Image (cartoon, rainbow, N blue to C red; front, side, top):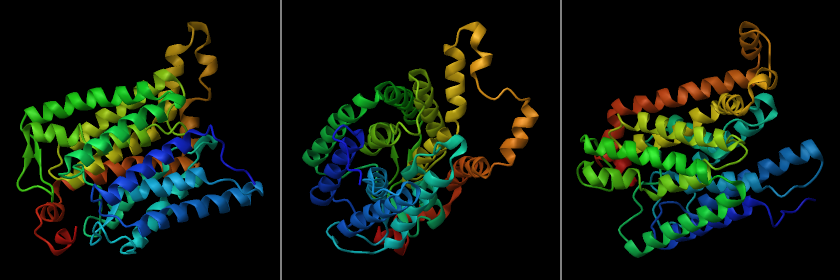
Length: 356
C-alpha cells in the first residue's frame, strides 16, 4: 500500500478545491449536492485504484482520481438541482459519465506513453457537448450577490493559487494566459460584444462583460488549478509560456462569437483541450529555441521523413483519437454560437432553463 506523501502538490490542490466546495455549499449557493460531489470523487478514486492495482499489484492512494472527480463536481451542474438539495442524486449519471470519460482519456489516449489531455477538462467538455444544455450546464461565471462570500472565495483562489503554483513553477504560465486574455476580452467589451445568462436580465455588455468573463472566479480556477497540471503542461518554462498564451488566444477566438454564458464557458474549457493536444509540438518548438545551433537537429526526436511519420501516426489509435477530440471540441463549441435552444435556455424561456 502506498499512502500520499506530504510533499505531493496534489494534496494542496485538493485542499483548495475542497475549501471552495464548502463555500459553494454554505454561502455561495452552488447548485450541486454533497451527494453529487461525493459520488464523483468516489467513482474517480475507485477507477484509479482498480487500474493502478491491475498494473502494479499495489494499492496506491488515488490522488489523481480524487482530483478528477472533485474537479468534475466543481464545474458540472445537472438541471433541476438547487443549492440545499444536499443529498440529491439528480442527474448523477451525468457526473459519473464525465468522470469516466475523464479517466478513459488519461489511461487510453497516451501517445508517447504520457497522457495528453487534462483529464477533468476533456471529460467536462465532452459531457457538456454530448449531454447538452437541456440536462447539464457549467458552474456560472458569476458567483452570486453575496459580496462578502465572493470576496472570501477570491481570497481562497488567489492565495491557494500561489500555494499550489509555487512548487510546480507554473506562475509564468498563469500570467501568460491571464494578461492576453484580459486584453482581448477587454477589446471585445469595448467593441460592443455581449452575452446573455440565466442569472441576469438582458444582455451583459461593456464593463460587466469584461468583469464577468476576464475577472470571473471560474476563469481563475480554470487557469490556476486546471491548466497548471504539470502532467499535461509543457515541462520547460518557455513551453509553459507558449502554452498559456496559446490557450488564451484560442479561448478568446472561440468566445468572440458566443452570445451565451454556456457557450463562453465551453469556449474556455475547449481551448485547453485544443492546446493540450499541441503540447508535444510546443515542447519541440521550445527545445528548438533553446538548443545551440549545431545540436538542434539531433535532439528533436524522430528524424524520419515527414510522410513516414504521418503514416506511423495514422496507424496509432491514441494519436487518431487525440486528433478527433482536439478538432471536434472547438468545432462543436463554435457551433453553439448559432444554437437557438441554448439562447432560449439562457433567457429562461424553457422548462429546463427554469430548472437551472
